Image (cartoon, rainbow, N blue to C red; front, side, top):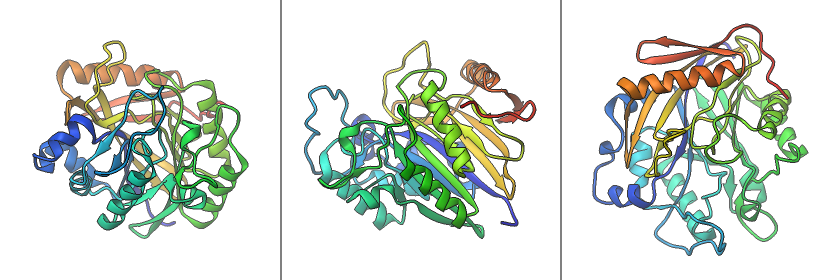
Length: 336
């Protein structure tokens, strides 16, 4: 790897329910502000967590304790294409919300649009298989995994998600997959769906898992699940880094005042031969089915929250105009 590559990373992207209703009647350009689209396009590659299936078929997963079911219409693909998404992870707790039929439709729609996918598939091998993106002459391997729910796991019974009980330990198959990817690609991006919702800092098992994934060969670990952004851990600069939770990109979720899950970040990661060289974040304001650049008090809240979250992890945040720049105060070892 003789050059650097810029990756745009977005977290939970839910295109069902009210977003899905709007997608069926409005053009894709009405859901994301032009400034956000431009920030996506400026990157060399774009990856996000697709927190829904894409289908008109299927039945709700038969779990009486599951409160939310997210299914997007086929028109959702137009929004992903507008954003020029190169790959999505489906390793999450909504990929099978409408069963394996809807999952199969999701894979087919993504394939037809030329959007790579990881973290779910028609069998165990497919669910765990990484994809490699050729980005400006750089090979970027992407792996997806989720620590919930166990019932969605792909296995002998059929398709599903790449599940790992990270609360116990990072399994050997995942460490081996990261190691193989590190031997074959220039950059290894691991994107786990981990930990509980609406927590403002990574849990102990998330921190332990992040450290193990970096030791196995990951260049960037970019997590999601909390619905709010977390801080960044860095091993050196340049070097491997962990974005513990990317936050959200678009949805119709109720706003929790204390944690402000309606405020998010679009992350831009510049990776060179020695690892992550620069990390920027564009502040976002999420309304129902509409994502804009955050301004005023909303932006100030994001700056303060990110500074607090990063300070706990040994990193600092510089306000660099339209973006926030994250960097290590010194050589920082990601806690295990």
